[in-house]
Image 1 (tube, one colour):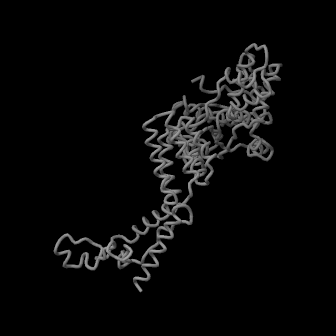
Image 2 (cartoon, rainbow, N blue to C red):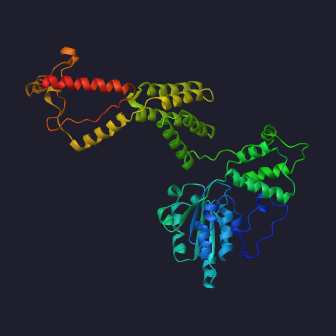
Image 3 (cartoon, helix red, strand yellow):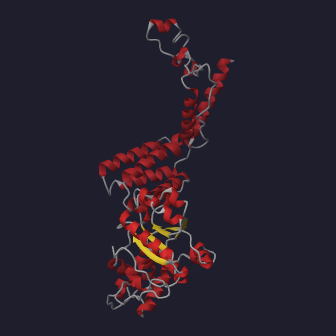
Length: 439
């Protein structure tokens, strides 16, 4: 247990970091004003800035990507308001560990010293374990600061969220990452062995993760080079950070939403970008294909009936070719959908028809359009008076097909785009003919 919990340290005397420690640890901020990239929280008008100014902390859930300062800010918060700091990780801790932490916090509370309990990866605690925090947060035994890379709305229970303020940490932008490199160079006492273009490329490879950037910089400081590296040489030397993407979590839903909205907005360039983001991050191609098939029906429909055919053909092509060759067929389907005329008339019609079917129950269709396979059914009028449309003038009888107890409904309203424009003209012609026949 000793390695799971941080030792208590007086706020005014932070532990010295040895020269052998990783560069990221040696550059860890010593005060909130040294934190980069989160000024919307740490500034005077930010939520954290206001809490520190008031000298009183509320329980907090920090939500943000890796390497953005969640752990660091939590430590600095405890120092800033004079709280005892204890850190645990939900990955390594269980109920027994939590009970020990709460008992120690209760003992310190009796002598007037409140505890800031930092819980890393808090979303990894199950719902029952999360409920275990509630009484200690409510009675002030601990100020809870949880850190998560996952959407709290999905991963934390409502009772815990109602007692904590969710603060969102931004991925570090190029300016913030550049500041970290400046500090690293000042600490080491020499510049990174990079051309200006390679330095920009190094920042881009970090993908907003400050810890990853500093680890890469430490590698560069450790090697002897005759000349600064250009972008190509840097790429050959260092690996690029893998994009943050969990196939069953928020990143997955964010990108599929972005893809769908880009397709609906007829932006093939953006749609192709989000498609690439998903597939290069390891998303299942068949999942993307299922979403494209759904899009073809929901957002294109009969404005271009070939869209559905293209998407199903892409699925068959991918099944036949596999990856990576089959991914081109997915790209083709994506671009076809993005550039096709759009209509959600079929989707709207489906919802309206389903709603009407539930509301009207078991209304009998008109007997004229019912089959009469038995003599009894013929005797009671089934099929009597039915007009066979192929025998009618123009192949259209103009008959009434609605239940007698029900008014005619209009579910499907084709738009004036693509193939649906022709469908609308055809439907209008039928309505005119129907009115003429009945008159």
